Length: 124
Image (tube, one colour):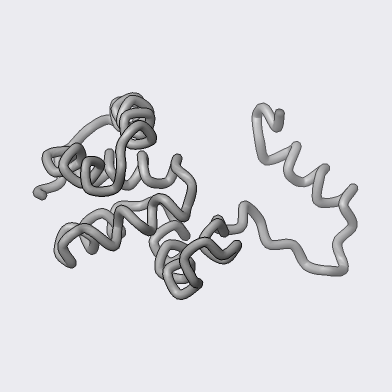
């Protein structure tokens, strides 16, 4: 599907409604549901679902559509979905998400928390 230019807030709103609908359906129905949705909306909705469900949906897409969705996915998600796919169905490996932060082992929790608080306008 050709990417459609949508504002970030529009993508988030559309994806929020779409992920709820995806949860109510099986994989085959979900693939039909997302067939006409823009790639960025599908990527955002899949990112909001359990990684195991996202992998099952991605496996059913054509290779072209899957590549298009992965291309516009949030940083780290496409790689994580591919990594999760290497784990057996039903295993904990299918549930992994990309790391939110990577911290050096020599940094204390206090230092890291302070740095996060400074870099975020609203850390909570």
